[in-house]
Amino acid sequence: MASGLAAVGVASSLLDLAKVGIELSKLINQFVEAKPRLKALIQEIKLGASVLELLGGVFKQEEKDQICSANALDVANNIARAYQTVFDELKKKLSPSLRAAKMATPKSPLGRL
Image (cartoon, rainbow, N blue to C red; front, side, top):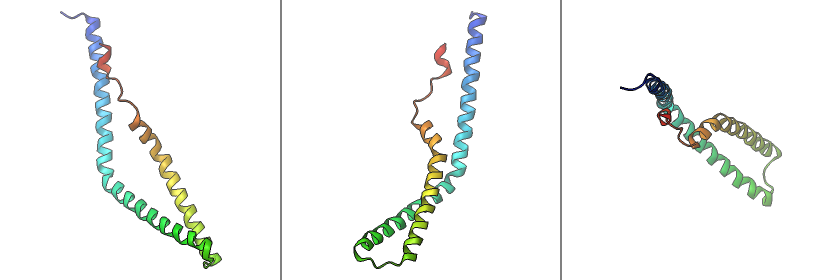
C-alpha cells in the first residue's frame, strides 16, 4: 500500500499536469479559431512585401535616372514608414509567442515522482 505522502505527491503532479493540459487545449483552440485571420494576415504581409520590393526596385533605378517627383519620394517614404510601424507592431506582439515556441519542452510535473 502506498504511503499517504506518496499519494499526495502523485495527486499534486496529476493536478499540475491537468492544468497544463487545460491551458494547452485553450491555446490550441485559440489558434484554430484564429487560423483564417492568420492566413489573411499572412497574405496581406506577402502582398505588401511584394509591393515594397517593387517600389525598392523603382527607387533604386531612380538613383540613376532621377525621374521621380518629390511627391513620389514623399509617398514612398510614407509607405515605408507605415509598413515599418505595422511590421514592428507585429514582431512585438508575436515575439513572446515565438520565444515560447522555441523554448525547450517544459518538464512534466510527473518527473518529480
